[in-house]
Image (tube, rainbow, N blue to C red; front, top):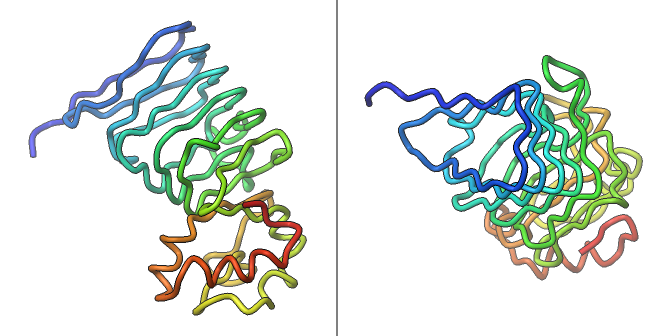
Length: 207
């Protein structure tokens, strides 16, 4: 593989533009002191090619053209944004413990209703300001506060909606987690309907 071209965007405000981050030979850095307002951001690169640190996205639309896996959005502030496409293992919001860049992270008034989320976490925010995707996605609210009740339910296979010990322990800032039932059902060799039968028993799960 040849050298990747660094595409660095920082220290400016961009309004009403369309940014396509799709070059397979590029490494994108959206950096400090960058504000995007009412922009459309098209993402067609893996998380390893996308670095977002200290960016403010205001009223932007994200078109995720290939599944974005394990991307940390907690170093960005998102307000009034809309997401479309598939995202899995992503973190949004003001995540604790703080590491470089997370001190400015946050999320509010964002719309994920047209997205497909699986294993995506929302930190340090008010989930009531967010629009989550409907079934077959489902979102667990206050997962840490309701962890004992949630984890004692008869979930299919060895699925747990929240990990409270071990290497996968949830950070204390986790306010909501969204899953995609068909993906989870495939992983645990069961059906989405088996998940729904448990989901329907909880008022802290929206779907």
